[in-house]
Length: 149
Image 1: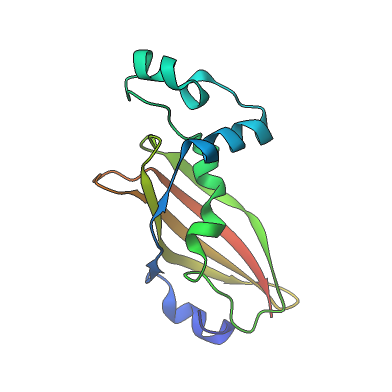
Image 2: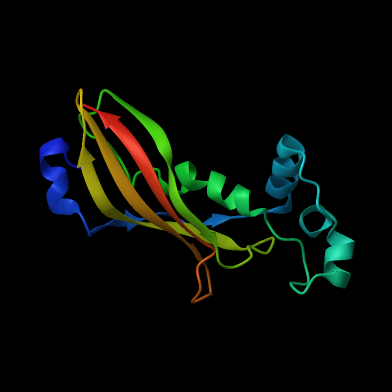
């Protein structure tokens, strides 16, 4: 991404698309362990195969959201910034389940840039987490990153 003075010209443009990432049961189980969310639809393979409309376990929505830094590495960069922090989320929608074994990737668009005090710049980025083989994304999240130049 260009420096602060060039950002406004990039508003509305796609920043890029990341690489595909496969979501395995080990990742789902690890997330369940860290968060304490052991709902059967995520961790019980046999029950999910029998009772879930998806026929298998699915990733936690928050797991998919938490993968944003990994999925956007190399897409959203902050050239010339001294420091960058997560400032928040404006909107998140979980649109499709991520069935175990699925592959996801991020497509990111710079939505807005807000210049603040003390060299801070807020970058609003819409991340669409695409689900391989599906016309409907897994997730859409509007994030705010605060960069200090």
